[in-house]
Length: 142
Image (tube, rainbow, N blue to C red; front, side, top):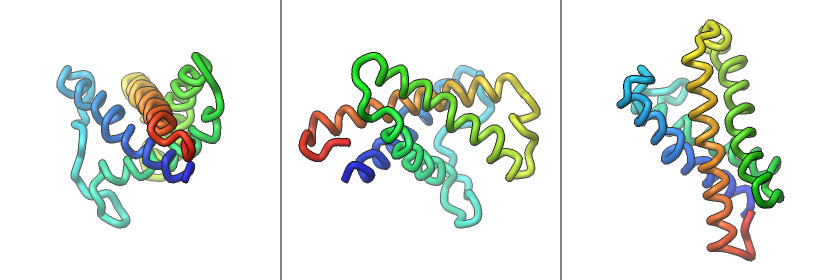
């Protein structure tokens, strides 16, 4: 149950916090990418936003394993740092090259800062959903 709740926390945090911040950044002209992309993502051709949310769920499990038992400010700071750094490093240094793009987007500072901001927001959102699950389901909480 803990793994399922952690997956759901990361999935929802992607849709609400990550994509919500991306929508704000796009609207402000700070990001060329629009949020909630329904363009197909290969190889299964599911909408990009759902693929991203799935991976957000997988990362949600990792975040819970890393900081789920922490308390107070260290929990929130740990979730922020975990979210900002680990998914960003994987995306910039593994995923982009696998997709035939330059590592770290060719060291584009806007891309790097954007990844850190979006994934940091995701980390805080995932942490908030995990704490909400603890409150609502205290006997089965992550």
